[in-house]
Image (tube, rainbow, N blue to C red):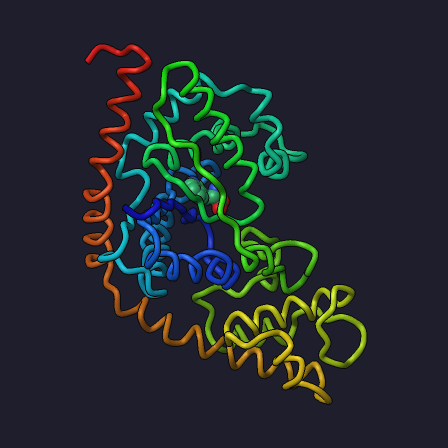
Length: 325
Ligand code: TRP
């Protein structure tokens, strides 16, 4: 039996090339080596207000991105978090062993709530829901970006605490980070990760952006002083663009620098835009060819595949904590 991995993306906002390069591209490879479960985490998405119709649309859209990128429902399970009620159920139980002080220490929570009033309870509890996602399925490895590692550490702690108190129940998972997931920074600010919630749309390239918009965003991307194409830490903006080029072209950063020797930023940016457009066009075509009905059927079948695992684990948890059967 292969090791199990679990990961998910929230259907809140446009998926961008950072999501693809940092997560999905890697999952497409991992599905061949691991027993893989990929989730569209809609329960997480509503930790900030969502328009209901928009949420439904985006949930299908994230699934379409998974499928169009090559995630194969024959090889792995793709499903929607809210279709399996055990995620919410386990969250409640884990809430009773999680500590307020632990959750207050979560960096993402602190970032998301800085200078905000009336912070929602869901945002605070977000990591416990994530722990439930992972622990329900005896997940061994969780492919995530570095920013999520703290949540995996909390997951491990909660699992250990539960096991200690009620007996062996949960497998202790490990984070699985890859270089690429740290690499993709905002086009307007190379010191911060590319983000779908960024203030400016010039921060990211959405997977659904048209060719015209992609070219415009790349032309407007900030660059560093100088004019040569070099790959170095003191040229973070250029470094980020070369990383993107490299990941989409499967060429090394050295090769790219060599290709653009003696050429200027503008020529490099045109080359990069070509590479990105050539990637996005077939992806968008595949997404368009997937009907909502077909995708929904795949998601429902995915939920039926994982449901027995979640049910079994939840039954065990209820027994352990002392609920009447
Ligand atoms: N919190 C993750 C993120 O923002 C998404 C997520 C939710 C997730 N549940 C998960 C990732 C379980 C891995 C495993 O990227």
